[in-house]
Length: 112
Image 1 (tube, one colour):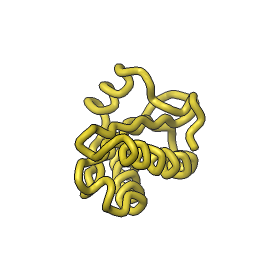
Image 2: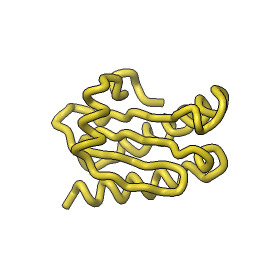
Image 3: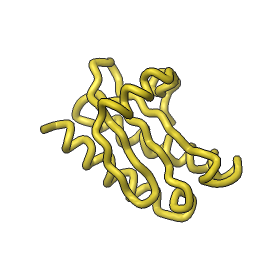
């Protein structure tokens, strides 16, 4: 699980990452990432009500938090990442493979 200091909480940080970062989409989610001079990588999640009821939304957020904690620990540089879960596919699709593929693609684009 991501430590509290590794989470994006400020709306300005979300906005900056969405506007200035790179975007990589998959069927169940969209990953926005940007390089940052912070000391550790941070992640934030957007899971709207269209994904499902509160139980489904919280399950999706927990799964994404777990995936992000492991993936960002091995990132080659510090990044801010915002993950937006897409409505019907977020609960049924394989979030792990979509997240890994989207994050790898975003990190490749940021490295060049």
